[in-house]
Image 1 (cartoon, rainbow, N blue to C red):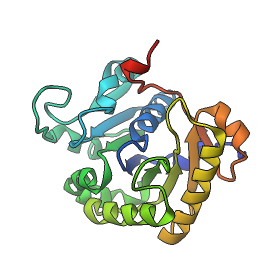
Image 2: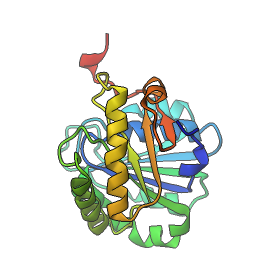
Image 3: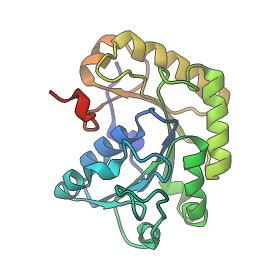
Amino acid sequence: MKTWDDQELQARFLVLVGNYGSGKTELALNLALDDARRGKTTLVDLDIVNPYFRSGEKAELLQHSGVRVLMPTFAMTTVDIPALPAEIQSVFETPSDHVIFDVGGDDTGAAALGRYYPSFMRFRPETRVCLVVNCMRPLTETPEEIAELAQRIEIRGRLKIDTLINNTNISHLTEAEMLRRGEETVLRAAERIGVDHVVSSGLYELASRAELKTPFMPVQRYMVPEWMES
């Protein structure tokens, strides 16, 4: 297993996109909490599609750790249609060491990025767009499906994907071999897409047995459904 170098995903603006159930939110939480130890960090919950498993649910934990949290207006309420507040634009105007965007699922959620396209273009060299892939989820089980999803997200989000993150898992039932097979699939997808930067993520004890080729980012689980808590 290659040693994880946190500089590989260090960018002023880090955008996490992917399909439903890929684990974007879990990664966003881990990265934001880790970044907060080194500098001023903002987490933008840009999910205007899925009301469940959103980073805004952990706002209290994040804020207590020094992370500024921005989310759609009416998020975490009973209102059906959240709106993007003007405050989100401020992340491009005020100094911040790190800004992490947790974007809603698939190309529909990525459409929210289009609103900030001019700002992202101003800071494109300081921006890294990461497609999070869980090969155990429908529509991202093969290199072809992953490449198709990547194309749709790039079109709707208007940003080219820079990195693929293999986050293959089935929650607490994940096995090391699943993560390794997911890595093989994601590497083949990266070749099809033309992306040369691939990393893997998951619980550390799994990666130590998976014999991965890609750098591995260990994560802690924060987004645990109530029905799984004992």
